[in-house]
Length: 341
Image 1 (cartoon, rainbow, N blue to C red):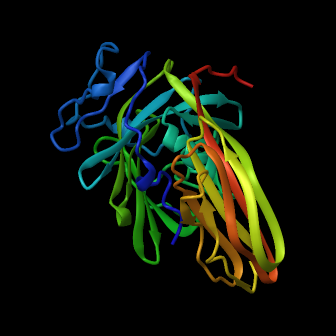
Image 2 (image 1 turned 180 degrees about the vertical axis):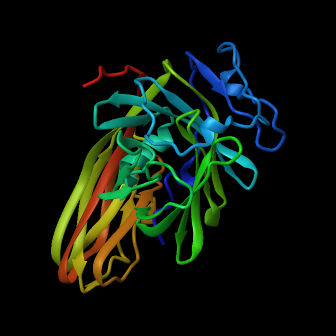
């Protein structure tokens, strides 16, 4: 089972939106065709709604030969929808521009946090030559240029090998990439040259859809970065008792525990967190694995801040394991675009 998608639905919890300013384009409602003014953008300025029923001129329906050019401060705002419910809103902003690549950042702390952990494809470096992304060492190729109906290629997203099929343009000039894995639709990406970005991303198997609700230039809200601090680390060949202390400081958003290594057998079913008052005992992992062993757990420490202890048995038989406990803290600041390189 791959790590959940480009933007994990279980972790899209922050719904607050920053104030935005600049040139804004409104997106029509998919069901009614009516122009939508997101509540978070009320009072920002005049919005121009495109005609939802307009048909693109014939010249616009020709194959698109080259990817768009993005500028510093360009932004696209999305709603993440599951089972008709909006579970999060977030903005992607162009923060860096160079001849070879862009860098997208976000205003949503949860998205930024999980990009730091899982390396999400829609956040971070984007190739200027074809809008492809890099995710955990793999190229994620959303489109193949020039855009032409019937084009196919192979790509990898969320550690899933998928075959891509490009169809379009439709009557509105939009193109759709469908990713198939094991002969089933994994995801679809709808690209609109008019907004230079994806207007809809649908993870079919997981009932998660990202819908573009607004876009513009000269972003003037807040963004954030993630600061990671290592709290404890243990590397061990052989199996035996473990006792390690660590302290969680104020401002920490979450604590992440990973076990990683190559081993024939691994047992950690006695590994627990012990709270500052010696009262809370929370299991960390209970697993036996072979070959490459990867275990992740987000520690639900309560209270989060304080001195903690990891207690139990840890180690590998026929290999070596590494245990790490890391703290993640979101730091928010006003968006400042970097000068082109």
